Image (cartoon, rainbow, N blue to C red; front, side, top):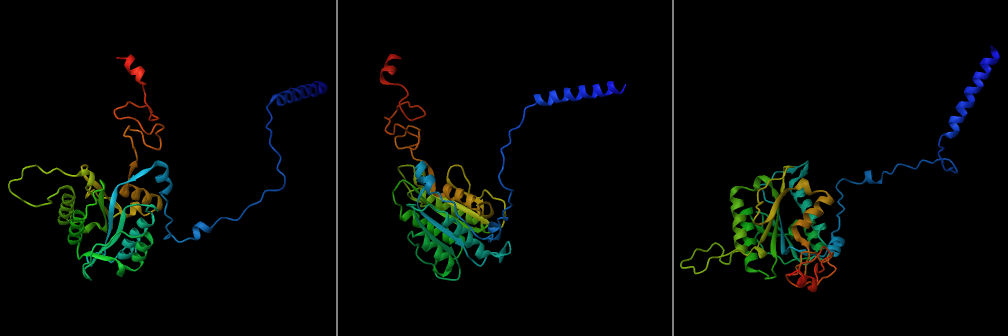
Length: 317
């Protein structure tokens, strides 16, 4: 009996050994030395949350050959007495200037548009609208607010003045002018929205809001050279569509939505840049166009080259 049990056990072990020999073996490379644990990287967490590292648009502009949207841009910051004392435990004036600083720091390095900085302030005399200046100068003005030119004592006066200035100094370049207003949402009253509408009229119609008798030709708008008005609202995390209209350039956005580097760069791109350039007008952007000099009214393929040769076209007639 004992012999039978021993034989059965031996048979079972041999069968199991055969099964294991048929299994695929995993080839694990040998590791020389013991594993080591490195120190936890704390550099990022030790940095202040107020540090802002802008994301550059220069490479994208060069690669996709982006064109500029505006020839002049006035960044208008609200520093009037009507503003709240603080927002997010930060003085409201400081928060507004910080948003402006992040916007300026994110502008393309070689932008052709003239960018200037102005403030709404009822504690000083109104000054002339400055010419465009370098990024370093604009950042210095934000550090020393007394250097920022005053556009008016309130929103209505400042917007009206800048809109009139754009009409008088139309560059004729075929691109528009821009106003970027940074203010408290509650300051954008119906009266301010009416003033913004008048600023659009200044840029779109030759005669502005003048009423005259015996007009021979109906005025048409100059959409290609109109005003672009951008509103950055502070005091509420949610964006409001206060100046957004499909037929004109400009939109509203909450400051909290664009405070981070990637979001601010996207906002800058939408405010000062247009899409990629298409020099020959064939519908294919220059950076993708392998035949950059297509003739007018020519059907092209996705590479920008003529889709049908002249002989093929004649043969199909």
